[in-house]
Amino acid sequence: MAGLGLLLGGIAGAGRGLAQSAAEDQRVLDEQRLAQQRAQLEEEKTARIDEARAARQRQAGVQQGQDIQAETQRLQNQSDAAAINAKYGSNATAEDVQALRGNEAARQAYGLLSPTRQSDLEARATAAENLGYLDAAKETRSQLQTEVSNKRQEASDTNTNRRLDLQEQRQKQIDDYNQRREDRLDRLAAAQLSFQQARAGKEDARSEQMAEREQRAATANALRGAESDIKQLSKDIADPLLAPEQKQVIQRQLDSARTEARRYRSALSGAGLEGSEAPSKPFNPDDFRTGGGGSSGGSSRATTVPNPLGQGAAPAPAERASPGQQAVRALDIAINNTVRDLTAANNRGDQAEVARLNDLLQQQQAAKSRTL
Amino acid sequence: MAGLLTPPQDDAAAGGAQQAAPQGASAQNLSDPILQQVEQGIEEKVPPDLKKDYDSIVLAGMDVMFNPKTSDLIEQQLDAQGDIVDNVADGISKLMMIIYNESQGRMSIPAAGLACVTLMCQALDYWEKTRDGQVTDDLVAQATKATVMKTLQRFGISQQQVDQTVAAGQAQGGGQPEATEA
Image (tube, rainbow over all chains, first blue to last red; front, side):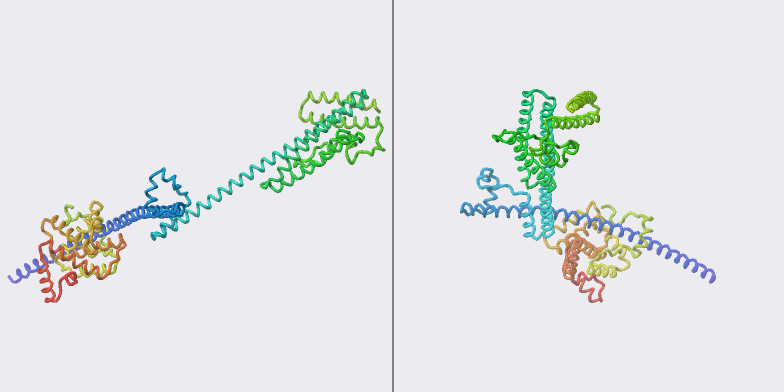
């Protein structure tokens, strides 16, 4: 019996042990579950805190904006009231000005203009400072500085663009001047050639006189053109926005045009066109091509065409060649010009012009042979 | 809020949480040392037989406070008229009543007396973190006293009864929450 009792006691003890063990396991499981739930709730709490902070920040931002707006308005009203009182000797308050703002006619009457962007930013920055929103004030001031800087840059860019436009315009004027000058000299050369051909061709005195008159008229025209250029160039060179290199070019053109005009005057004066009694003085337009003041340089004729009659190269009156020699020289010039034009026409592929110039060249060479 | 005191089980997740927080529901995510100390003190004083009820009440309370569906309540309560002590005490006592009602009267009042202080710490922590509040010893003492009193009053326990209980507890050598001594 004692053995049975011991056995039953052992079984009962083992049962209690198992029950305690199961209870302990359950307790641990419960603790784990609670810990896990607590951890989840802590995460929820953190998320809510973040959301609440963000919402409050947004709300604070809105509130700050409204506060600054109201303070800005107050400052502007105050400033406008002071201006109105100074002007009219009145006692208007900021509140009076605020009331006036709603009335368009009153606004106009008192000159209550809408503030400019810059003055608005300035007022906002001051308002933010007054309210203790120092970060907002700093940000607004920084924005103001950026906008002022951008405006300056824009103005600078506008000036730069204007300068570039002007330089382009000036360059075109320089090129136009060179072209006008070349055309002028070409016309003069043509008149000169015609005159020389008239002489070389032993045409009658009347035809020669006519050719000479034409040459004088061409010279007078050239003088007018040169004087017009001088006027224009003098104006151009006074432009303060002119680039230094363009100024140099225009200065050279101006000098050249003055020299050109002086020589035309001298030639016309020598020809008695300006009331002078001096004997007729031959005139060679190629003289001026060498002094070309334009950036594109002078004509190539300056180096290829002989310069027997031009200033500096012209023989003294006592040494003047005989009419036969003059005719030969004139024909040489004409032949040279024709050869040059022929080369140019050839280069252009203008066959009709090449044929015409070939005929002309043959005639000129024949005339020279006859003269010789 | 059904099942506030019997939260759903998630054994798989529970395994992960076992390593993170092996000691019941205590997680101690409070960053303020004063609040940490109060909560720690409360949890140390929870009798083993009340531990499960205490944990369940704390979890149910935190669920109401921080669940996205009901978290507006704490926001409204913290922004209500009055000072933070009154707002927190009033809010936590109401919360305890909600939990009590949800438990259909099965909630342990002694466990609730301790849990309400822990939940008050959670509310003050939230207030401090979201509204740049300043938690001080004095504030916590006032809030603890107000919260416990209001909660017990909502359960029909008068100020006199509380004072008697506190006095009896002190005569026996402690065992009562510090809140009542504050």
